[in-house]
Amino acid sequence: KAGVTQTPRYLIKTRGQQVTLSCSPISGHRSVSWYQQTPGQGLQFLFEYFSETQRNKGNFPGRFSGRQFSNSRSEMNVSTLELGDSALYLCASSWGQSVNSRSRLDTQYFGPGTRLTVL
Amino acid sequence: AQSVAQPEDQVNVAEGNPLTVKCTYSVSGNPYLFWYVQYPNRGLQFLLKYITGDNLVKGSYGFEAEFNKSQTSFHLKKPSALVSDSALYFCAVRDNPSASKIIFGSGTRLSIRP
Image (tube, rainbow over all chains, first blue to last red; front, top):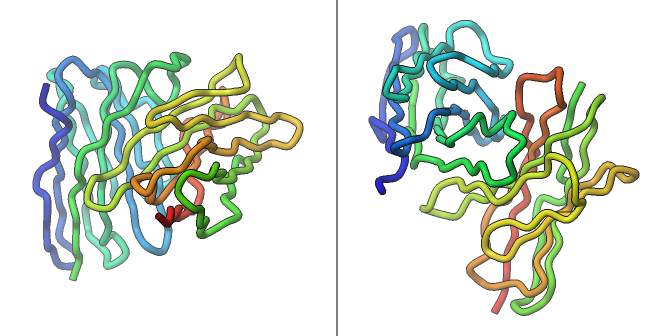
């Protein structure tokens, strides 16, 4: 079956603009998590959605938001972009709530990421 | 507050030798612990997680991790390293049940020489 897809793969924006990134999970998966990866801050958890509800959230300002649709596809939005938002944004899908799941078998599958550059 | 540390930026191992990538954590409750691997040009992959129960957790690609509560460690191990194991490895922790986010370590670059 198809893996996790993220669109677009590359994006260049300028400061002050807003951006929307999309993540399509593996068919049948109900959970989507988002992560930010930068050379300076490393990997950071943004948020997790499960069945259209945000279940977990990392320490990011309100400019970062997301949502999940009934087909489990998820979008994240960053408003008023800053230079520091330049990063690789990764999403991952899993059948259950991977961060909370007590199942050892509940595996996350990651997409290739969206590389966002803010000029 | 929860935290996780990977004390080694780089680990070098000869192919065929056992490898260990270290991780220590700090949480106020019972931890959920995770290992992820990021291969060049292949993206991030989930390796394994510890929730509760057996202290030795087996994951993908022959990796396993040992949970040690007294030492607050969750080291990643493999009995015999392969060149293809060369990658960036991340440990992560979630403080159960109050915390709602997962914290990642800074990463350890594992280099396996032939």
